[in-house]
Image (cartoon, rainbow, N blue to C red; front, side, top):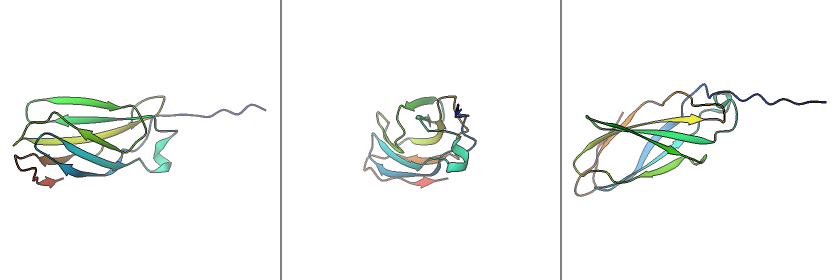
Length: 112
């Protein structure tokens, strides 16, 4: 008897993205994986878009962990983050963006 496992690209994005800690130079993000019916296989990595008004950087988290510290940020800067999940086959859609602003005191304003 042969058993075939079909892996596909995730149909849904990660959910419930929150900023759990803000300092002048870093942000800690936490999220939930796509719902099980949207994963289409084992999640092997996440891609995080880190955006400012003038640039976009992508960071690939090579594990199935659902949290990440983003460092080397600039104080007094607004950052927007979105996250996608990947199976071995490829990358799924990006989540809704979440925006936060760093400050010298580490206080922030977070909004969707």
